[in-house]
Image 1 (cartoon, rainbow, N blue to C red):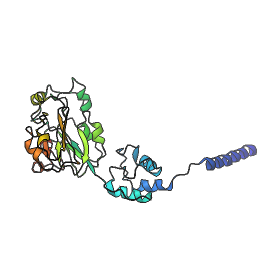
Image 2 (image 1 turned 45 degrees about the vertical axis):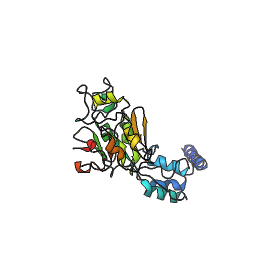
Image 3 (image 1 turned 180 degrees about the horizontal axis):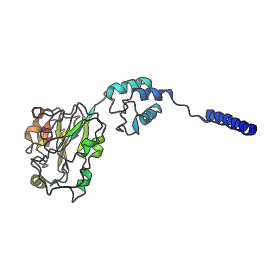
Image 4 (image 1 turned 90 degrees about the horizontal axis):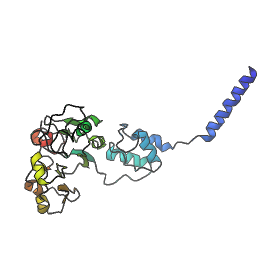
Length: 276
């Protein structure tokens, strides 16, 4: 028994010495960064949770403003911990659903009664919606949002509450048709359509889709609109929200942020997308 006890003590000392010798020292900045991060663990930064991001920042492999949820305030605190200057020109981003094809404006090909999931619906003959680019309206993005910043409108389209939106990107990843994009919250004019079909085909399936006519491109005084693959898109860094494209668009798929305020929207720019 004494021999066994002695061996146990010996092994214990050996393990303690080995643990001390081979221990990996933790950067003291790591814990401090973890403390200032919001703790949402949403993965919007691209790392596995806040601790994963904190480790990357402390090692210098991620920027101090990598947390989309914390915004400028958290970025400034992290910069101080890392001994860096606060990030200048931080741009807050929010999610917007670039589709205006609600039940009143977009036609359907058949009634879908399968799984309540957009990806699953899209696998059934291309989805019930006649426009194969449009929102399927089953709320996969809403369920993916960890901040309660989205809800489904009565018109079948998701609504984004931009006051609550953190720009984490969870809804972007959840949309099988890539209709949700992160834009600067200061962006005032957007094209609420993602269809690359020809104009004649768009008119057959949706009243408010982009038909690629190019009239918006012609009237823009700042060359802030480009037309590619039958679809207009706006360059926010050039757009001064003059509104000429909004007035000229024949299908009214170009919308100025705030026009939908009277319809009860909460942060969503498109009045059609947030009616109800």
